[in-house]
Length: 466
Image (cartoon, rainbow, N blue to C red; front, top):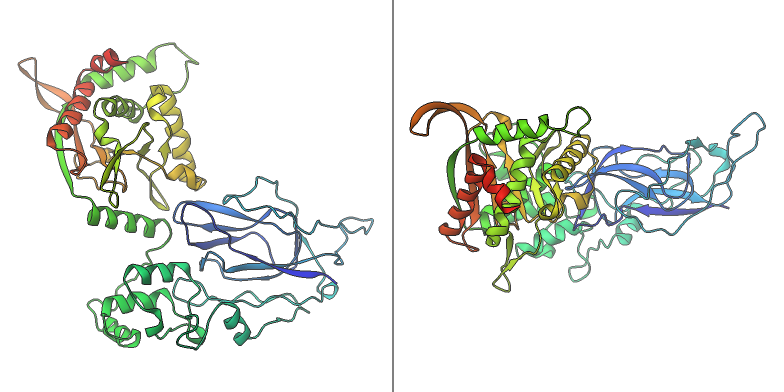
C-alpha cells in the first residue's frame, strides 16, 4: 500500500513569506523523481522552480496557476512506495522510483535534470490524498485541483480547519494561516481575535487585515461597504504582488524612513565617449566584448566610493549607528517585463571595467529571462540607475533601502557647451545623486558627485587613481 506524503511550499530564503504559482510542471497521475521540479513560482525576488523531495505518483495539486500561497501551505501530495505504472516500452516493464531523499530545498532547485513524465493508471492507486488545509494569502480562496480517479480526500473541511490552526475559541488559535497576515497585524498593533474573517470557516485573509487598518474601528464588513463607495469604484484594480509589490514596499519604506536629498550636475561626456571608442577599437578582432558606458560609469562609481566611503554605508536605526561597509556590491536598475529589478555586481571594488561589464551583461540577460537567483538581487551597498535609456535627461532617484545613496544618469545628447572658452556642440549628460542625509552632509555628497563628473569629463582623472 503506497504512503501519501504532503509536500508544502518550502521556505525560499531571503525573508520571503509567499509565492505565486506561475506554472505547474506536473499533472495528477504523473510519476516524479526525487528532487524533480514540480512547479514554477514567482517570489518578490525572482522566478524559481521548486523541486519535490519525494519520488512517487502525484495524487493532488493545491492551487491554480496565478494563485498566491504562503510558505508552509500544501503544494501537492505524492504517493510513494509500490504503485502499478504504465509500461515504458514494448517490453511492458515498469520503472520504479525512489521514495524520497530528505534533501532540503535550496530555493531555486537542486540542479537535478528533469525526467520524462510518466502517468500511473488510476486503478493502480488506492491511497487517499490529503485535503487542502488553507486558501492562498492573496485574498481569494484557491480550490485544489481534483485528485485522480479512485482517490478519496481524507479530511473534511472541519478537519482541515483544525489542522491549520483555525479555531472558534476567542482565546484559542486565531483563524490565520499566512505568516504575512500575522506580520502585517503585528506591524499595526492589530488584535486578530477582534476580526471576523471573510475566508472559508472564518479564515482571516490579508484583505481583512488591510481593511481593518484602513477603517480603524470599523469592522471588515463596514470597511468593505466604504470601499465600494470610494472614488473610482469601477476603475481597474491591479494587485500589488510579486516583483511589483516588492518594489512598492521597498520604495515606500525608503521614502518613509530615509531623509534623502538630491544634488545634480551637467557634465561634458565627450571625452568619456571618445575613450570608450578607443578602448573598443584597440586590439582588433577577437579582443573581447565591447566596453559599455554603464560599465565605465560603474567603475567610476567604485573609485568615487573609495574616496567617499560615507556613501557606501547603511544606517542601523535601532543601534543609532552608521555602518560603513568594507566592499562595494554595486546594484544597477534593470527594467524587465516583470518589473524593475536591481541585480547586484558582487565585489565591484575589486573588479576591472571589463569584469564589471561582463557581470552586468550576464545579470541583465538573467533578469530579462527571469532566471535571476534571489541572492543575485540582494546585498547591494550602492545603486547605479541609468534612466537615460528611457530618453530622459534627469530624475530624482529614490534610494534602494537600506543603502545610503544612488547615482542617476540621464541620456547623453549633443548640446551647446562652452568648451575652452568657445561655444561648441558637446555630448552632455546630467548626473544626479540622491543620498541619505544621516550618513553625510552636502559637502561629502557634492564632493562625490563632482569627482564622478570630473572622471566623465576627463577620464585621465580616473586613470591617475588606478
